[in-house]
Amino acid sequence: MESYLHLDPFPEVKKALKALSHLSLSMLSNGNPKMLNAVVENAGLQGVFTYIISVDEVRTYKPAPVVYELALKKTGVDKGNIGFISSNFWDSADAKAFGLRTHWINRAGVSGDELGIAPDVTLQSLTDLVDVLA
Image 1 (cartoon, rainbow, N blue to C red):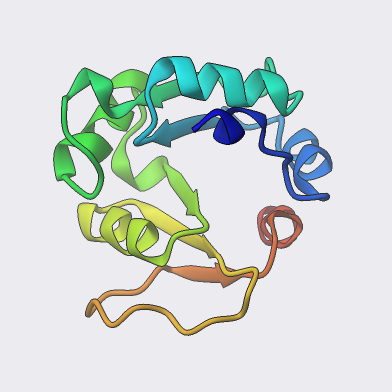
Image 2: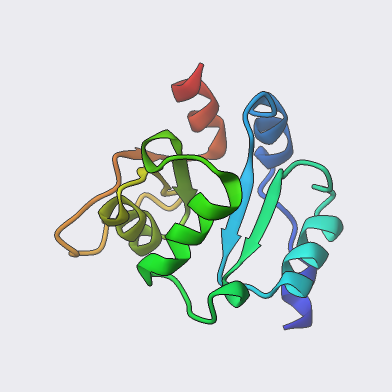
């Protein structure tokens, strides 16, 4: 668990997040606040996210709809105006089922899970997201 607190971001992440800094960027995670704050700090991403949202507040994990609802409550943004990005297919698919616009970062080029729903957009890296939103 200690290793999680010191994850290095993928090479393009800092540059891509900087290019997206005109947007309100938030993190929604199954991690607890202590873990999330530590990983953000240790990755050198302090000040990047407007909100760092933990499931601890609702005492359940994704993919429970109440977790995605928490993002709406915290940010004050409507479903249709949130772009949800994840490297987990299941998370992107469940966020789409909830009603968010979704982007799956599929770095490995693997097939998506058979869940009956798929993310709106599949990308290979966060840089691709910058290009899509440009």
